[in-house]
Image (cartoon, rainbow, N blue to C red; front, side, top):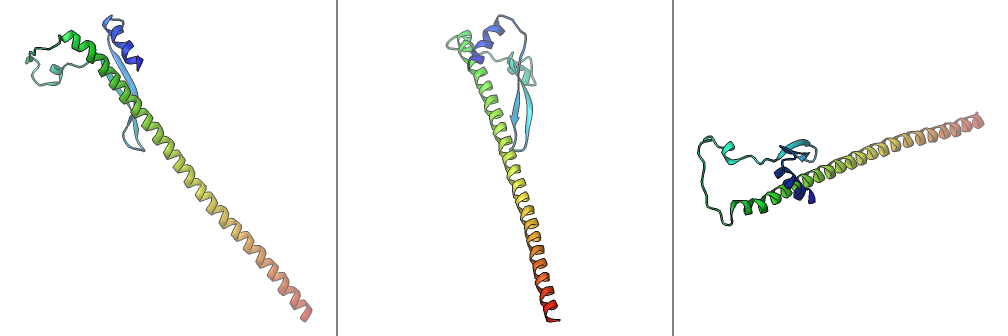
Length: 141
């Protein structure tokens, strides 16, 4: 997960303002949807609350900078890892659906060919019987 370690220093050095990740979000086996997640800057807690003026003041041990130096790359790695897992699950689900459809199509094809073979064989048997009956009538009459 070197990506997570590379993006944070570049963001801190202000090489870019925002960082987004686009991936395939796994919903169900049949549904995967594209998802866009903002990795950096991380939305603040104040932006999610109804009271933007209310700010909590905590004492951090170790310092805020030391915590962010450890937690920010870890947070980015977890988001990237989640996206990779969901994309992999979506790919496996798509493969599973494709194989299931191929199996169903093969079963339908086998049934259709079996029916065609049986009809052709029955027609051949009927023709042979008609020839035998016609020959027997010609000899008796």
